[in-house]
Length: 376
Image 1 (cartoon, rainbow, N blue to C red):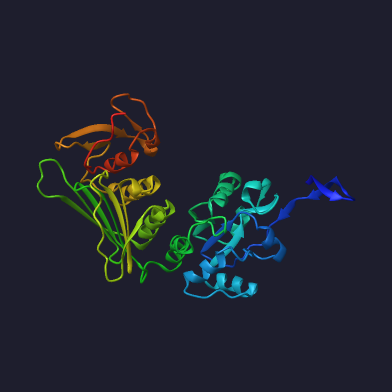
Image 2: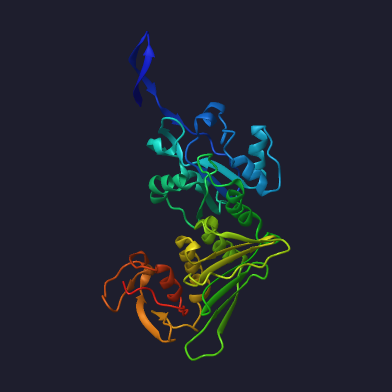
């Protein structure tokens, strides 16, 4: 595709034609690989060097080496060898496209790579990580709907591009999911995750013990009902991926460090929701409006998968909401695929149609919260 541009030629502006079609690189992969990282298309500097992530300000190589407590080397062949030794494959979503500059926003006429062949050829790939949201969008639009992906799992990580102004330490925290996937949870710095709504509902996921506990109160009962569940490592890894992918830490407060892991209670003016994430040397807390809605919803969906699907302790079908006087109001009835009907309007919808859907999510898992959402 030729793109017409103006250039200063012979003392005046003249139209010239430029070929803006670009092509990506071969994948870095072998039979040992268990995860794959996908970008969109190499940038201008990477194309010039013929190297993945060749821009010095792109933090990709620094992050990958930091995952395994190593220092990046400059030799590109050694970098690719490092990936393969750690069972990581690397490719881009697109084989070719037209683009001015390096911005993904300028991509036109994209042509995807042949993932159907690659996934059939390399069957050891368990999870695909997108390096930034644009890679995920391109994959879903041009690849995923056209090929069978079987049991492959997908996760979107913060972009390593310098255009993403997130701090390096914060990017690295999310990218550590790759090491969890490859090496499991033993010895990892993540210790446990807690969440709840006021005094009525509390869930703890203990990473080291591979166990979860849910406490909730029913009206008229002085003691909370406690449900305990042993979890497999794969269940926990999937749960952590769901929670991290929702950008859990984007509004969290770092409350404690090694030697002082106490943390502040939720402020009195919040709605009572909280998520606390405990690492070996620090604690991240989120309360009320600090919690990213996607993180709250992801937590509740994952908790439902781990607790609600195989337990007869809770009623099924009706969503219960707790009022201040302790009474319960059946507000919604769950249907298939997360759809619900409202007894008042009888109109089906999705959780995004209602205000305070994050509270409704919790109660939809048969747990009693501390207040009902607004009637609007």
